[in-house]
Image (cartoon, rainbow, N blue to C red):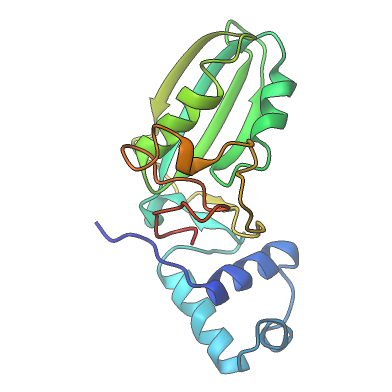
Length: 188
């Protein structure tokens, strides 16, 4: 299985296209410090790999990324969504009617890291009454989703934890890409 690898220029190009899908390659070249042909080649490569498509983001069907669906029964779904909002692995959340009132989608290159997020940030929350976790096994159609690559680096992760002090880091979790503790390859 080939693991998706993006360099800094690739991430910046994706971020720019997500913000302005109609921007010209010449304008992108000026913003990222490359020639227009280099930008065109990178965009073509990203499209061929299924990383970007007409709707700029990551194509889940072709990228080999994992998606975790987390069904949560909780008292305050907005509090949980706010806590996860800036997490680089957070794809989306939906407040729903029914027994479970919150669905969270996490995306990443490693299932253990996604499960660690659930174990550290959702399950221990006293406002959470029940959690069911499922792995999306396959997507039937190309599904383009934004990948959070526009984050600023810092010492602490958005959740306020220091990955280097976490018992999961180094054992089952790749760490947070915002910190210097990230051991993955996608969000470097």
